[in-house]
Image 1 (cartoon, rainbow, N blue to C red):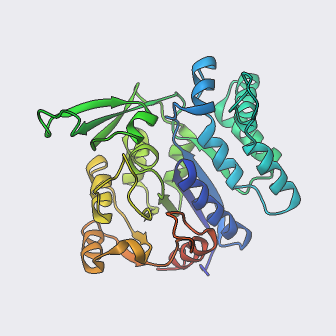
Image 2: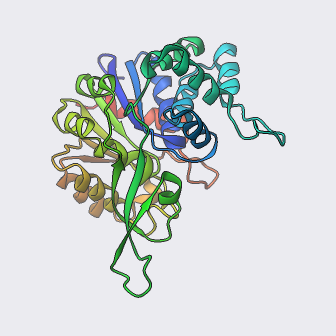
Length: 320
């Protein structure tokens, strides 16, 4: 156990961030983590989030909702509210596919006129063990330069726009940017600067993890913070986003989008390491130690086991 409770900020979105936050929430309960914050991407353009974004001109709430649900407790109150927050309407009408939590968040945004204050109110209602913040205060679109979509010239790049479109592209993603110019959330920038640890990943590498590094103020905070940065690698390739990328290539992508980023630790499940010496050398080139620990589910899926991830986090946070 770490000598003192520490402040941790986790960056990402979707199911990867959800698993990471559930693991870190357990460490809050165990008094290993004192302050926990999630900084969440706001570039989703599909499903319920995309519909609400288009109709009301708000931030897409889906990834924020998932982060809040992950921070709910294991008691009856927390379990019940997490289920309510994640409930998706069925039926054949206009409400089909909408999620209760998305509607709740958008309602509070309209009532209060403040993104952060509204999310804090939802967190209080849920009894969340941490704070959820958007990475930016304006809705964003991901634009990716993708190679391999022009049959006549395999080296040519094509611009692909939209989170869903980028995540499902058949080409190889070279780089991403955000449109329009992101307006960084000041509370998110402050949380990164004041943290003891910052956790990057797991999650969709180009659409959930990397977007934080192309928000100028967030990138500057990540480069300048005294926090130790922990990179959690995914458990396998993701069709569309990371096909053909080796684990060390994931680190190279981070460095390309955020020159000067200092990584302290890289966490990887042994099943994806392949050549341990090669990955360790790649981590060391960015100033990081490699920690290979079993963090995957036993069912063969590319999903992180929350209990194993929590145990790995606790060991890493206790290191000098």
